[in-house]
Amino acid sequence: MNKIFEFCARNTWKLLGTLLVLLAVFPFVFTSSYILRIAITVLMFIVLSLSLNLLIGYLGQMSMGHAAFWGIGAYTAAILSTKLNVSSLGTFLAAMLVAGVFGLLLGLPVLKLKGYYLTVVTLGFCEIIRLVELNWMDLTRGSLGIAGIPPLNFFGKAFKSSRSVYFIALLLVIFTVYLVHSIINSRIGLAIMAIRDDDVAAASIGIHVFVYKVMVFIIAGMLAGLAGAFYAHYISFIDPSGFTTGQSMELVILAIFGGLGSIPGAILGATILTVLPETMRALMEYRGMIYGIIIVVMMLVKPDGLLGRVNFKYIRQRLSAEKAKKQEGKSHE
Amino acid sequence: MFLQQLINGITIGSTYALVAIGYSMVFGVLELINFANGAVYMLGGYLTLMLYTGLVGNFGLSFALGILLTGAIGYCIDRFGLRRLRAKKVPKITGLITTLGISTIIENAVRIFFGSETKPYPNRIDFGQITLGGVTISSSQMIILLVSVFLMTITSLMVYRTKMGKAMLAISQSQEASLLMGINVNAIISLTFIISSALAAIAGTMVGMYYQNIDASMGFSVGMKTLASAVLGGVGVLPGAMVGGVLMGVFETLGASYISSGYRDAISFAILIIVILFKPSGLFGRKQITKV
Image (cartoon, each protein chain N blue to C red):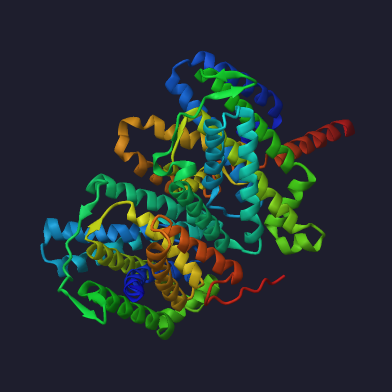
């Protein structure tokens, strides 16, 4: 296992390039709309898992309300595009904005809370948002849901085929990975992780805990809102039953299964846990149970998630240090 | 009208309190939210029903067996799901995910074996009703209240007055030190799980009888509500969990009848959030002091 990680760390850029090429070729190799549908779902869950990872993995705030932001984004996009005929670019931006505002609304008051109190408040937040979606008949049509959401259209051009939707989803994933990666590897990221490890110590060295926490809540909310807008346009029908607390928990499971605080982990977790239930279609009614068993066994065998303890940056540094040592040894000879 | 709703609220709230005690006890000992507790509550109701219709036919006996079986399942959750995690000293969040997984397993198993449609439930505690000054109290309500109060008293006595309770307190402070003092840590933790599961089973069965139906999804929503009530009262404090549970029941019943039935749960969650924001450690919780 270590060898694989070392190999990955050594050839990060080559592997990344290969992966991108493979992803670009993918829809031309697998043209079946069923497989493409799974691929698009996977890509969307990657965005959600990454945004949640920012909250749980990097900031250390156990949020159980992430599906609410997803739903807010989806409903914003659905309402704007069906009632006001806004194009997808507009709905995407609006969904991010609205979800971000709700991120702020949730973030501001819960900042004094710690641990499980925060978890329960986010959980209550998710339930309240779902019930508003369910009961505000004029705006959301309640449990009937909003149907007939137009497909994605940018600059007057509609993207209807699965292949084009796939590429838009891929672009969203690349955007999200780039954003999360640059946040984590900046001063902000260091501050966030310092807050995660010890917020009192972080405050004492001049990190503005409050600002950073609110910032992460807003960014995570916006990304989830973006995924929601994409989902609404893609699936063309949404109803409140998709954005429940149960769904929030599944998102948490995605993030933890892959490994908290790891971008490749979040991607891997979302991919495996989305594809896995599809491969078990034959077992239909046992699917949920097997899913549960996998999670329990996974936690027993590898409690940190798949890539939770694997720090590629550290492995790379170690490898280059070893290399430098070897060269030094040679030059001494 | 108001008094009537208040009584209905207290009745359902007292069953929430029983489940909330389970959350609170496990949290007190392990600092872990046992998300499987809601599923266990639902499972308890189903097991009693299964024993009643399938095997025994005697409700009292099947109720007792149902409680025992659910307790055994509580033991299994701890023994096979969580004990090894404790031994490995993994972060607390891992245990939480395990309990989420277990709750998924239980819910889906129930769906497979019993079907996901709502099932009728026999009400064996319905002996008529009495009317007192315009307020109608059915015998089911009285029995539920009495049983809940009785169980709450017993559990409180057990936790605050016996050696076992002292052992729980010791474990919550330090597992290593408790081991050194000769406390059988694993046994006490298992016992906590057994008690919390048995309480949940009793609550599940009583609610099944009260509403005269049961379905597989009831575990989840009640799990959320009772977890919220445990936090409302202050996690880890038993009287807090009881008051929280009753308050939750009253809020939701009054909210449903005076404001809007669709927003019933939203109202109780909104109140929960407001309380936590003003009193972050819950109504009865001790203020946490951050040591640096």
